[in-house]
Length: 273
Image 1 (spheres, rainbow, N blue to C red):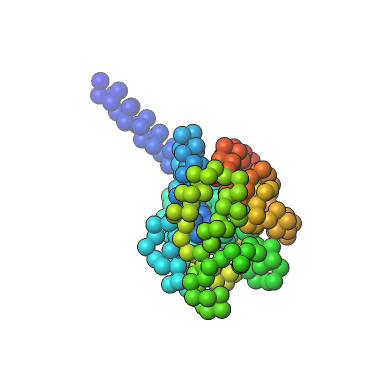
Image 2 (cartoon, helix red, strand yellow):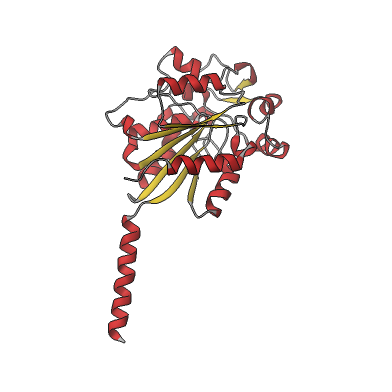
């Protein structure tokens, strides 16, 4: 009996050691401008029901984060919650980092700073700029041309300032194909965003930047970051793969099952190290 007990302990120890060494897929979801972790609720449900580990991050001043957007003065400050979260993850986590809209800037920042932690980066209708907003072309392709639909906290000519998407523009810009109940939910939860801080996001490209595999998921009926803008960014910084969804700017609302499937295909298309 004693020998059996010892062997069982050894087996449990070996199994635990194997779990520590084997990569564990972990989806880390990053929201876009004005949104928060809450926008991923359908995708989180689908992924967790399929057995995946999922974490949804609130960037500084977003979601339930207590900071005020007008007090976020640098992009590093805005993105610090994501960098802190990734830094604290165990080395065996196989991070699948997903960014939507302006969350693509956060993903790129993480690639530059913590590329070795990221198995694959997935951009969903997102800003994908290798160096951030460094040139006029970056702004043309990566920033929404919707300033008339924004309400600025301190005025568009004053820095720093925050912005909020006008309520009468929210559905037509971001949720034009989404269920009405989701667009109403969003209108209740959207918060001002540190727009000028985002536009000042610039990154120092390091030697390991392009070692992280990237996948882009296009949103074909997007009125916020338009398909031609997405095509321009894809052409200038080509990802490993491109998928396309017949969705508006918010596929986590309008086409959740299709987005879920694309996320799984994108993550499976990159072999584990």
